[in-house]
Length: 214
Image (cartoon, rainbow, N blue to C red; front, side, top):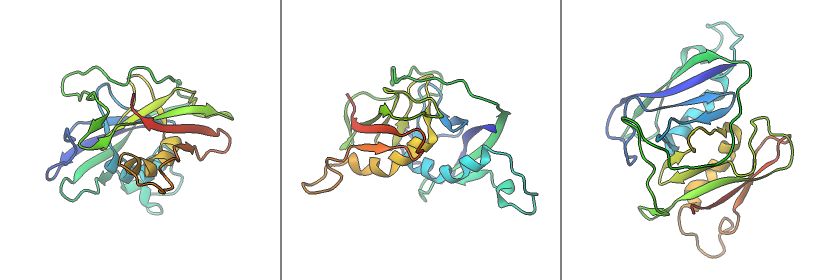
């Protein structure tokens, strides 16, 4: 397997994220775990476009270059036609087994030059800040997630605590629910009281709870 670095290389328009994604922003994927530099974030919309390529790009491609299109694809653009942020996916290292880091800890990361600071407060632009927390692990999680591990979503920006990771597989399961649960839901909506989701891996059975940020 390979470690991946996903970097925003160009912005062809005006990114509507706030703060806007800029060239040089990046995150890494290692053995299915997502890690973000201190103070950084991932745009939720862009992440959904990147996910289908990340999993195969982590792995060795056995087919010849003229037999598999995955060889020639290394760029993905955000679905927003106003912003058109172009991301480059590159392999940065060959890996055997990652070192696991768990625990939610302090989600407000310290900033360095050019980094973003996660804002405080539970509501931004009318949207609730959400926290997705591992509530229970009923099996054996191959990513090493433990109760208390978490990530946060503020507006369209996803933050992972400094020095921590979150399983890509589990993250993918929660993503479709998050934009809806940030908004007020009417009585009778099936999602109003449905605040738990399980990772798709039947061996791990990681239960995650979606709740307002403290």
